[in-house]
Image (cartoon, rainbow, N blue to C red):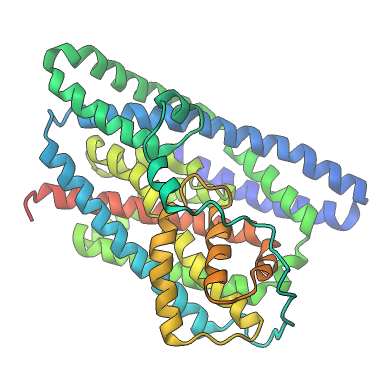
Length: 409
């Protein structure tokens, strides 16, 4: 079904562009408004179906995976440590490429926008970034609350404790372990059912966006979007190359083929969450042991959003360029270090990239209202960064699995 689904999704993307353009240019304002509203129902339903799958899938996969480790806390610590080490390195590379690319391409230079009033706001709250709240939020007050709100990181924390405890139970824990494995298989089958609706959701999402904003928005922001996608391509190649050095270049090519389906799905829906179940399946087909894939991949979704991190750096400096604000090398290095920390709080924050950008702008006296410049095309940029997040997490998981084969080190 993989190849067929990919072509259906790409076809739906093209049809959505055409349908959206026709509605935008030939339809009345009322028709445009109604079309966006009713098409939004289809998109929202699909994303809700995906979110319905993710929490039980992560819970079951992690508990069964860690349970099969036989209580080997050393193995769990080693896998987690290697994953975090890769995430930190990937974060550094992602943000550095974003800063390098925006300075090289300079998409905002020449816009010469007048500085807005000091009181002007972007409408994006930066209050989400509070160290105490972020750290305490890692641990769930209730696993049922975490499951009901799809708090992936909280589910990971609970599952680690539950998996280790299950492994220590020995034979008494076998029924629970088998139940977790059965639940995981159940959710993967449900995923197959849900994916059949993906092309329809892609068509609805793209049609609604183009109908509301028109193709002209892509032309107006051509330099910014073009530069960003060039940077994303560089980042994807860098991630695959770095991964290839560990897992072998041939294997990196095969991994790229395996994750083609979830990558296209993430791009067309502008949601890396939508691609999670298919990415997990792709990694297991590639040969990553389930116990590693089910542990590292959810961690990546919380701490390793490569495309989103690069976007934060790229967009922040673009806004500074648009206002004619020059940033020194020292300031840009400071920005890199700040983003290395704040980007780790992205998971679970609505419109996370925009929130991080808004918080970063204030650190360098760049008008926060400049965020409005990129809101018009944020959806199209989200498509690219979601796809890149999928690539980054797939490579990270494959690399950790390869390291684990070699054990000590």
